[in-house]
Length: 175
Image (cartoon, rainbow, N blue to C red):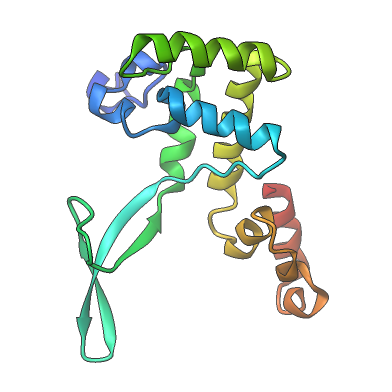
């Protein structure tokens, strides 16, 4: 098949990500890492999603999805899941290298995570990777994502009756 050009290879470390991309990823930002660690501490679900925001333009009674360069205030938009992005970013997770605008914030907060989260920053990496993997795998099962966020009504027998046994097994394996 030949050599894949570097520009087309998936990232393998955080260094492979452009600076503007690192600013968009939760595991590359100290304060986002603090929020994830807090969610774990207070037993809240950690869900990592990736996707594209698309504007919705009203046409009579229907909306048409339009590409969007940046979110605009007051413009309705829809989230379009992009699970393959999460899978491709898994090798780049390295919360210990998360960035902060103020260097003292980084030192203080990452030290706090290291001391207070069982397993420290390495455990945070695993939590982030697990959340990314589960979200990417479960992207085709919105009801499963609802259950992960605490809406267990979606798991009721009445709601599950429509799904085939194969579908249930596949979805629960993704969880």
